[in-house]
Image (cartoon, rainbow, N blue to C red; front, side):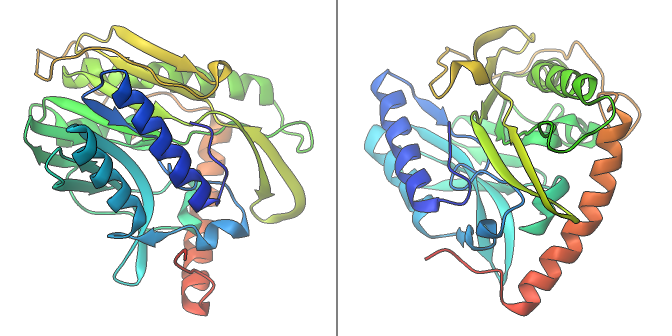
Length: 305
């Protein structure tokens, strides 16, 4: 999906159109990307990109599920109890639903929501379904909490990469190469570690925002794409790269478990992250948590509409 950062109304309409197209192709389950209502970037527009949990995004997904007698999944920044969370909802054909809140925001995501505390296991009419979004998929603890407990993993990402030449960074080309490599291997490795099929929906397209703690420097970049449907052995059945642009990946899978073919490493991260990504992770997480608290307490964090 090519979303417009922070343009909630436009993105909701776009997402519903994609859902109708996918169900029109015979799909029984359609998964939208993480943050399908807003994408995510470090920009003031994101301060008003949240929606009430039981508001228009949830109603659109439930309505599409009922209309097409199928399952609809996707995440949005949801306001609940005075705070924001990254809520992935899976709506069922009868209009009922289950949800998971992402356990930990990534980098500048910390500016706009808090981490959740549930286990990411959804009880559904087709059995237990696991949910993992973006960098939840690169943490070993996600595998540990889901392994031997789910028959399918669904989720998505809004995974961005390094900025263009406006921000000079040593070794930037190599960091981007490794970042893309990790993105491409992540759904496959999750399938192998869990022994279940994986459905991963992603954003494509360019964006421009600001650089945290460096006012005046534009952060121009793009989302990595890599929408994939992977079977329980790790074979990629369908894929869309960012170069393919907006579209729909379709494949037939059967929920169920096989013996995992890969074990998670005994460390926090599954892949070996470049030092620059680890550095940015640390400082932007800290900055983002302070930013969120100040924005919430000052009233600048607002619910859309």
